[in-house]
Amino acid sequence: MKRLVLAFSALAMVAGGAVAEPVSGGRANVVIQPEPPSLMLGLVQNGPTQMVAGNIYESLLRYDHDLNPMPSLAKSWSVSEDGKTYTFTLQDGVKWHDGTAFSAADVVFTADVFLRETHARLRASLKHVESITAPDDSTVVFQLKNPFGPFIGIFEAGTMPIVPKHIYEGTDYKKNPANNTPIGTGPFKFADWVKGSHILLTKNEAYWDEGKPYLDEIYWHVIPDANSRAVAFETGKVDVLPGGSIENFDVERISNLPNTCVTDKGWEYFGPHAFLWLNNRQGPTANKQFRQALMYAIDRNFAKEVLWNGLGNLASGPVSSSTKFYSNDVTQYDYNPDKARELVKASGYDGTPVRLLPMPYGETWLRWGEAVKQNLQEAGIKVESVATDVAGWNQKLSEWDYDIAFTYLYQYGDPALGVARTYVSTNIAKGSPWNNVGGYESTEVDNLFGEAALAVTAEERQALYNKVQSKLVDDVPVAWLLELGFPTIHRCNVKSLVNTAIGVNDGFKDAYIEK
Image (cartoon, rainbow, N blue to C red; front, side, top):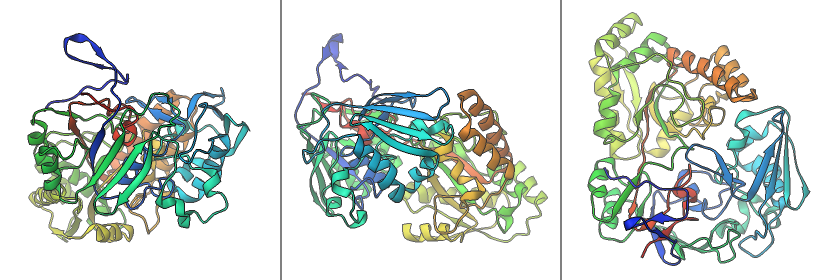
């Protein structure tokens, strides 16, 4: 597969070693699928919304591929020696898309008022914050109750999108008419949305980062059928296929077309991690030996090489290798059907069929469900597949109505932000498919995650996360499958598109079309 290596610099190397300046002008035609339910990023944080609206809204920071913070609305920042005071100095001359001046008051309102009410994932991190203040119009201070190691990682556009105080203060946030015409500080402004057809963003001529963006427009095409999305790229209708736009079996063919470049970068912050929910409360999956048997029974390498066309990596445990504090010093579960059968027998399994809930996200996922079913049957486990649509899948997980179920979750760069939620007992509650759906309970794991989140130094955090990863991999509360690979495919003359850890979600600020 061809791969485009993208640099953080806005400059691109061209033939002969000369350096070409970015070119202004042009439209990027991009696929968005499924169509976002909303573009008001402070209210809705699903994947398609983040992808489009991450170019309308901004946060204080961006992150490079190694998850190091970079300037965005904040041009500089500092952290006190005790890890409890974070001070941000804001960019000069920033304006909202309606021309109103941006200030520290917008940040305080957003983080301390608006998002505490609307953003459940961020709210969990803000519990560690004692106060958010603005000493002056250009400075914001977050005073923490206690050190919170991952705090510097919560300032990207999807996690803390800064919203305009002058538009939302004192209103019913969900009913505010501005939700239909979102106003941010980002490089692109909302222009038009024809449901079922397209979303158009246009260049912010008054953008604070002088000279950017280079593009005049981003035209997001809504194309529901995966085959039609592939055809749209083949025929030149679209220039960019973000990760997951086409079926995996089409990736290699499309990647080999002329003037086509591919990168698997731009997902480091999310760390998409595929695994099987295992119901730890009842049935065969409540038995630890049975759960360990599943890990030996599943041919994960087959899934990677055949179903995902070699994309991604085998998951060694709860933390992705692209996430901070990853450790592979854990029990290794290689594909071993004989070992699986031994453990199934030792668990006392009585032949009761287990209900397997595949993920209704397209053909690749349905094929994966069939492959896992076959693996388990070969290990002596009876399996009943339960077909659902997306709404039904969400409902069954939320109500714990399953034995084994496919899912994948984002890790958000730090175990405290995206991993702990799956395993801590305080996060067991019906009604959500994104919390501790498996019902796993361990006081030791709860304590380790709690201590690691509050430890001040990286060394302390690593030692604690090493322990919790080892414990979890032995207990197998879920069956880890793959660190998913979602390649971005684009015309090679679309330059500097993927240059942060969230890829195209904030990449069009730097992108340009080489003539």
